[in-house]
Image (cartoon, rainbow, N blue to C red; front, side, top):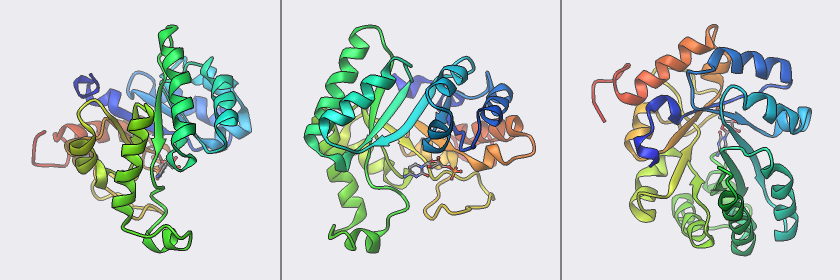
Length: 246
Ligand code: C5P
């Protein structure tokens, strides 16, 4: 199903801004052009659930709260926000199998009752490298850890994972065509990387099996966010700044 979505629907724009005013301003100019608006911790903590209601007038929201707590607390938090009916919501896979199972069960019931939310698990944050993981006594290659956590998320009943696009191809092969992959750390060709370390172009991410790409600053900091989004959508299809085709 998601592979058949047009490229524009597969672009999630990270609205990492501190206020509802700025978020709505961006949503207005991206409305009808991009498929998903991502609300992260900064905006949600500043503005609360109302900003999700407001933004969903423009496009479906990915509520990126990365919940990580004991199963009961995660389920109660999810219950509190599922009424907003975001398109996507997430928990940390490192919260464990039981937590992910209970979260998946709740989200499945929400869909049975007509909701549209899908649950993703965050594998390993792209800001964590091998050394940072070893400091936590998590040894082994980060890519192997991502794979293990993705398998665990699938076993728990999650609909997919958040991962680096560098891992999309192997996760797609291991977890099957129905498993949803959403990938941040995307930079259009020639763009500044800012604080992202392992960046992938929109074209490469889609080609390697990502269902959605998340792009923030290259769009939100652009002089004309709508034009920047359109250029990225062209790149996703291989028609922009790239010679290949999907
Ligand atoms: O501005 P930029 O395109 O780097 O924004 C990427 C977005 O994706 C941010 O909201 C960031 O929190 C999120 N993200 C990420 N890496 C992860 C998970 C989420 O960059 N592993």
